[in-house]
Length: 130
Image: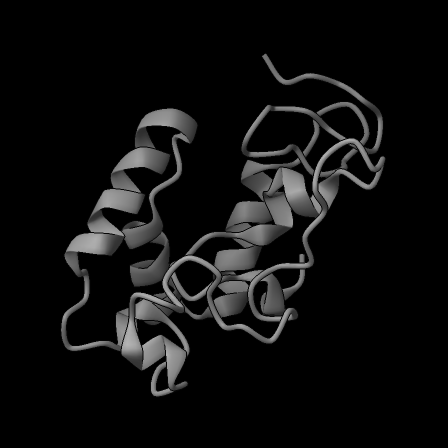
């Protein structure tokens, strides 16, 4: 897992369908940071991200803001992923520990590839996590 694929909001783009699916069927994405936009969603909504005053939302005095809380609730409900908890873990334990934890959480039991957060599919071996 690449640290540059951890978005400012805490999303791990390493496990996102847009990054994993290279078939051309899905709109592919290289992640917020490699795209040079800092944050696709909040870039237009958060002046601190837009102006590169912060790298991650946890660095903000308003953390967690209402916008992040709404995004976090949607991902916790749909995909069992907690952005706020991920950001707090990064802040308290470092990026390497966060990546190691997510690598284990999203590891395909069949081939060791990465399970997609959005559809439970391993794009390495095509296994669907049930």
